[in-house]
Length: 185
Image (cartoon, rainbow, N blue to C red; front, side, top):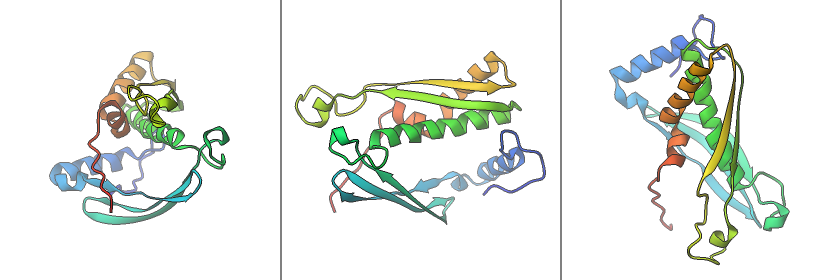
């Protein structure tokens, strides 16, 4: 777990605590294993509620409590009460990469004034609706633009960008197939 230290943070991150975590993982690789769980329940029409009750870090259960709502726009048979699953997917990818950009800048001593990611994607409903077996049900590609502002150079920001693409879990998850092991209870 991260320790609180007295060193000034860079981009809000405690670099000494990060180093302590890295050293602890190097001494005991089992401390690097993080497990997440989300339970989603249908709420009627196209609405669902997902709950997070905790996660596991190095074998230790750590309690958390969050609720996330999802719905579809009116035009897609929803009630437009929350972001849809595609918007939440993009949110998750962008949020994960944002952590990476902030951390990669911090470990290089670069103070950021802004970090923004604009992501766009199009999918064809013919795939989702089963109207065209040749049409995939999801995205073929996602386009995104990252804006970094701070005291780094263009070359440093490009290095950070490459590092995020190499280390971001959700970038990895989206850029490569994930084995999905679903079963009906």
